Amino acid sequence: MARTIKIDPVSRIEGHAYITLNLNDAGKVEDAQFHLTQFRGFEKFCEGRPFPEMPALTARTCGICPVSHLVASSKACDHLLSVTIPPTGVKLRRLMNLAQIVQSHALSFFHMSSADLLLGMDSAPQQRNLIGLLSVDPQLAKDGIRLRQIGQTIIEWLGGKKIHPGWMVPGGVNEPLTDERRLAMLAMLPEGLEIAHRTIDLFKQLVSRFDEEIEHFGNFPTMFLSLVTPSGGLEHYDGLLRIKNAAGEIVEDMVPPTEYQRLIGEAVEPYSYMKFPYYLPAGYPTGIYRVGPLARLNNCDFCGTPAADTELDAFRALQHGKPVSSSFHFHFARLVEMIFALERMQQLLEDPTILATRVRARARGNANEGIGVAEAPRGTLIHHYKIDDDGLLTWANLIIATGHNNLAMNLGVKQVAAHFVDGNHLREGMLNRVEAVIRCYDPCLSCASHAVGQMPLKIQLIDARGVVVDELVRD
Image 1 (cartoon, rainbow, N blue to C red):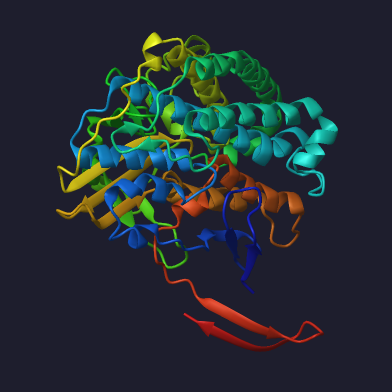
Image 2 (image 1 turned 90 degrees about the vertical axis):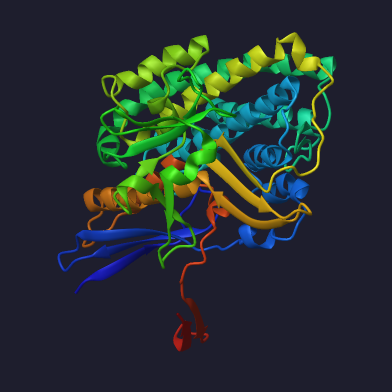
């Protein structure tokens, strides 16, 4: 008879989720679903709050990527203020956002995924973790800890705290940068670049072991969405929206972020608390696209820093200049972006104007609607607010980076499971590969929980022998 395999929980990701694999009578996978099981409700309980509170409030969505919410929310509030941010305020915001890219990408690659890559997908689960990695390659494990520390330290030195700093505010930032801190940050960057280069070289050596995974890890044609600079360069803080298709053709280009609703629709499904964004002109679910480092490197014409541009050429060689389609290569793209972020931070810190003291524009609400868009480590992040004449929030919509990838993650799980999982002879490595394709996307599920959904509540009464005595299910 047809059966269901449940992988619960999905490990080495941020947040809580499980996967169901639906098997046919022959034990082959016919369908698969990725279920986000937590509900946060930030969009609703922010209503009624004064809009200047929104950056600090929405940053509490997550302890891993609060800076990303600070950026997008502050930009939405800038829109409400109708002000121009002082140039140094923009540069300092960029600096913190780049530090966030470094620390978050380091967490994903080293702590979440490197054990799979170094030890193998079929290695013992008791060893396939950071502790096991320390025993096999202490330098790699230490590199991951140090690179993340560099990013977190720069965030702390700018904002006063590593997590949930209150430094980024509507209109700019609260305090200028001191020369002492600038020099201290600059002193750390060469070490960070050395680690990033060492790691990308190691990845290139390891990747040849995973030809089968590359072929089946979310490897399918989709569109790609990201911000780019007005000249088509890699962008994380500001810019214009670009969408490419799987053939590398530009579908939408230089779209102001304030027009995102023309491009993006949002659907919901009963089995997840995560929304399913899609490219609106193509409809749901046909309008599948991906965001994040893979999309950003596929979309941009150049990075804009020397070492990152060299690695971008190597990335593009993976698919002979066409968009790289395998989600396995999110890992490669992350490493390229870490190099870019470290190089770009150095450029910003060497700019004498980074020490200017005018870093914030002040005003009260001058518009009733504001939209802020930035590139979080996991992809394009959108904050959209409406306020009344007293400056109180009446409506909020958050489209989270991980949410953009929801359709692709579900399709990726199905593709991996259909190829690797044999329901008649289960092995742990099969199920680890199903989880690993999710880790390629580095989902942040606390951030992505924004749909009410219809997931059932099930309570079981189990006796001392483990027998289910009674069960109550609420649909």
